[in-house]
Structures are given as structure tokens and as C-alpha cells.
Image (cartoon, rainbow, N blue to C red; front, side, top):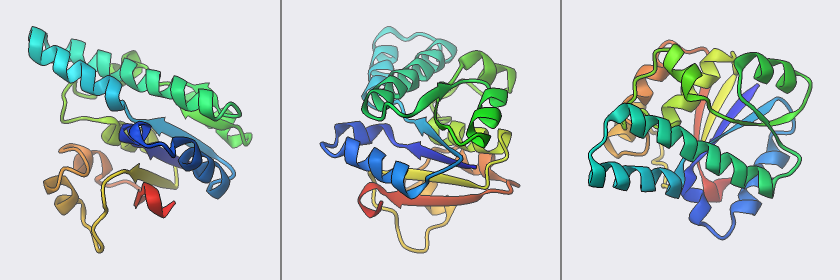
Length: 183
């Protein structure tokens, strides 16, 4: 199974449909897409700064931002279906269904994932990839990916979040980062 995290910033691209189609074509089976929060998560960040509410509420709102992006992705790629539980993902992806993860903050809280802006959809995709025993985690980014990258450098450059290294430590799956234009 492959977990493909599609950066929320791709929503700002006029080619979002083409990018999602290329992912669909290139990874024809056992695929689950993890949406980033994009503009919806940006709104949560701004609102939290303005109203100064706690990180737990902001984290839950950011998960809802990912759900909003999932709705957008599914409206573009109607053959994809939502899946929220790990059991559902394993059963349905194994049957060849094309899935978009519908993240559930209760599941993430039960898994002990911290409510922090240091844990973005990149780290959540890494957690999901481990939880469903994926063989590969692919992060599709709008940022340029430096040749010969290592995770420390990607963290320093803010291409992945500060917790991504921790979420990918001791994992069995392969990690691939790709710029959207290289799809």
C-alpha cells in the first residue's frame, strides 16, 4: 500500500486536477491519499493568533481543514472514496479501492499524537503509513526538493514539519518526496 500526502498548497495551483490525475495514473492500486490542510489550515493559524485559543482546539480545527481539503479532492476525483478508520483503510485499499483519508481527531488523540503546529499533515501521513503498514510514503510538495536530501535538511528548510523525523524513525516504509511538477 502507498500513502500519498498531497500538500494543501497544491490547491492554489491551477493544475490541481492534473496533479491528482497523475497520482491516480501512476499509483494504480492500494493507494490512500492524505490531504494537507492548505488554505483552510492557514485560516485556523490566523484565527488562533487573533483569538489566542489553545493548541488542542486549533489542532482539531486543522484536522477539519484536512477534511475540507479531502472534500475538495474527492469532488475533483469522484472515483476516490473516503475512509477514516485504520480497519476500513486496510480492508478497502486491499480490495483495490482508491481512498482519501478522512482524518478523525479522536483517533489521533487516542494514538497519543500531540496537538501542536509542529505536527502537520506530513507527520500525520507518516503516522498513518506506519499504522496501515504501507510500503511507501510519498509526499507531493509544491516546494523544490533538494537533490540528495536528508530529513534533517528538509526540516531545517521547513519542507517537512519539525516532528516528521520522529514520526518516521524506525519505520519500514520507503519515504519519497517529490515536487508536484515532477509527477
